[in-house]
Image (tube, rainbow, N blue to C red; front, top):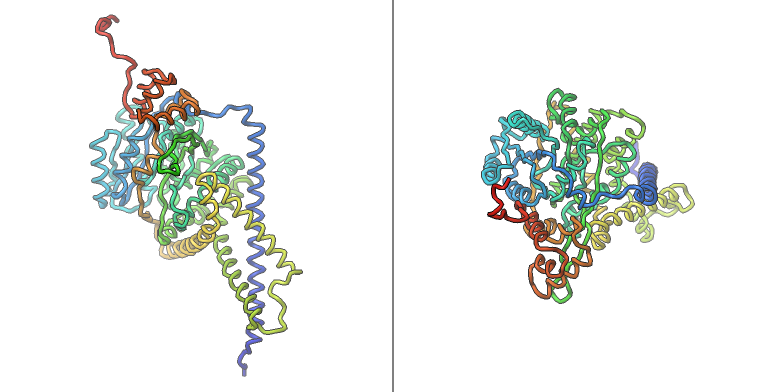
Length: 563
């Protein structure tokens, strides 16, 4: 008959089990750390080479040159399911802020989503550039299905007008679209089949851990990972927003998929589309383009001054602030990219492409391993404290002896973790400043917990859908659109347009802004008085700022009909 285990025997089993788990987790984290470290070192080496060799030979695109580019006919595809709280504000902001004229916004809605449909129809009555597109069948289906419905409406519009669209842009109902976005797409397409711009989460307080951890992840991923991946593989995945396709790219997707450009069975139809284009050899590019902007800075005595700062052209939006919403959203991303992407593309392509696929999919395991490591760290700390307090049986060696290989492995992983923290903080600092950079390590821990829950949910959902034979449906995430004060930071001012067009230097603009603080006169009048601008140039800039037509001078009555 088996006797009752003594406390000493039980501790021996626990000690052995913990040591096995520590070794397993440490080895896997070590391999992942080597991968991340080598990836970062290669990225920095490439960036240094470009700074020293490539950039001096090739002048960079400026906002002034971009403003001189042609406008290609553009269609904006905007699928909407239960977006009645944000869609009207988003469309109003989009149509009043874009520095572009030749575009049409096609908004896809469902017949059983009456509030969203009515909001879109009301916006369309006020602006002919907005076109409601009904799916004809109840939702939610998948986002890919809604996009395909919108594309059919675009094809019908092309057939009616006889003029094809050259650029197809994807956006969501919560996006803040940068004024120069469409100009940048028109500059690069059709030389590139797909252009992806950065996604920049809108700033939230540092201790809003759930929403702010998106800031950290996108800051690093869209400042480093996608840049090096494009160089390494010749392609880049689509983020689903701030992404443009050429006419040739859309036609290729329609041909490959039997008429439907976007995969209706995938929760990451954007990722699938980009990978399909890369598979067929079409050129894809990720673009980080900076412009100078004028922004107010508070002064210690309650006033403000103006300064010129660089601004990244990209798509901005608020991300979920609740744990449940963040887990659901990330589970959808993981399902579409890791699991459905694996099913669709396998491990095909050259070695560099397979390595990129590995990095896309390793998140499914690294999140779980990171959570295991966090739990083990707490247990080890508890045992150390327990031993110091006399609760641990005497005679047992320490769990991690200082002269053991396990200790060396754990110390190496600690260096890798420090490397990860410093890198993350640096990229956060570049976009959001020092306070967010200093608090990013705390959000890194919280992000690990979110990713663990998201991976667990994704595995559960994939297993359940496989057993039940279900098709994925649109997983709704509640959205919030920014208020006017936030939007104002990303809208063009008079000084912004002058800097873009090279009509004033930063010093001249700073002097004029200081003069405006003193006299409270309109900036345009001050610039004319200082001799920086003449009056016709000033009026043309004001007209462009407000999207109004501009005639340099009225026709003289004596010259009418002379020609």
